[in-house]
Length: 154
Image 1 (tube, rainbow, N blue to C red):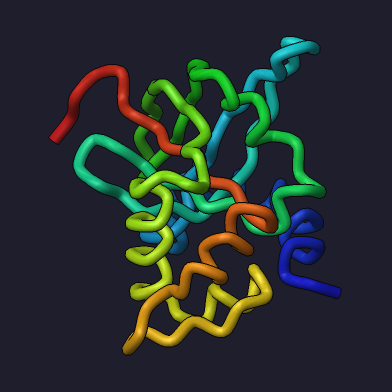
Image 2 (spheres, one colour; image 1 turned 180 degrees about the horizontal axis):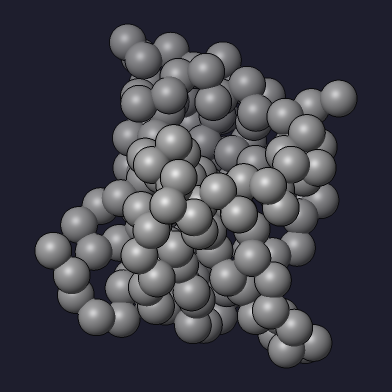
């Protein structure tokens, strides 16, 4: 069983913790993302790992082919977040894998958590960084959603 399948089973518990006064146990690396389905209009909340870049949040999606939530942001769309116990609103969109922004944010994420490369079937070497082939594989096996807050906060 892989990490994503384990997480799917414990997601409701993690969401509950992230929305509770105990959020500090997990808030440094996880947030709750509230997604509204493009076709169904149904809302659901999932915990996701993130990187923060000023007023933007970067969410790297592993095994993207078998996940659907990120596709709601192929075109920019509203998103709800719970970050460190605070409820926020923003606009999310998929970052194109061939863009400089995609490579920069993946590199930054992997430098912080080199082991994460295994979720994407790559061995990341922080000394040499990502190869072009690895970035290409990440564009197929993964996805990236960038979220900009609606109201600037400090």
